Image (cartoon, rainbow, N blue to C red; front, side, top):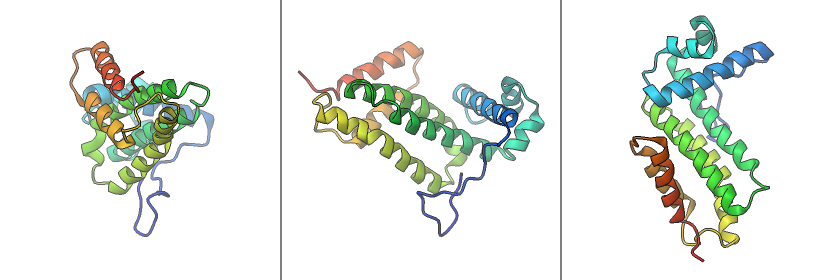
Amino acid sequence: MAVTEGESPAEPRVTVRRPQRADARRNFDALLDAARELFATDGANASLEGIARRAGVNIATLYRNFPTRAHLFEAVYLDEVEALARIAAELDDRSPWDALVTWLRRFVGYATTKKAVYDAIAHNEAMFVTCRDIIHAAGRPLLERAQHAGEARGDVSFDDVLFLVNGVSGANFVQDAQRDRVLTMALDGIKAQT
């Protein structure tokens, strides 16, 4: 995804498109999943051959979908942001606090992917602005709903919450369980005291 001069950041030009044919879409999605996993564990220098192998496709299929490593980074990043927006939209049936916590826990996964690919796509400032706007549009209403219900502190902003969760997700934890415990403690800090 990229924005060209004269376009609004809210309407970016997409450089990689999801294929129309079902089999090609499956390969595309498998490549995104494999890339997300390997970027999270191996960083931005994860092997493209390893990504293709994990996705169960050959390297030519990877390059047909993602002509450059940058295209793959951008597609993974955008896919994570779009998933955050979809999840936020699916949480209406949960209590306000549970909806916010569920979304923020998913945000930690996004932050891990972002950390892995940030340097590789940092040149694309317009994409980051667009993605930030999408994240705010998805998450801010969840915080506001929890605040209106008296379940989240009223003196915190959505930016405060993102800084808090980004801080937790950026730490180098020895185990996932430790990260989950620390995240739970951080979330307790924004929960309204009863």
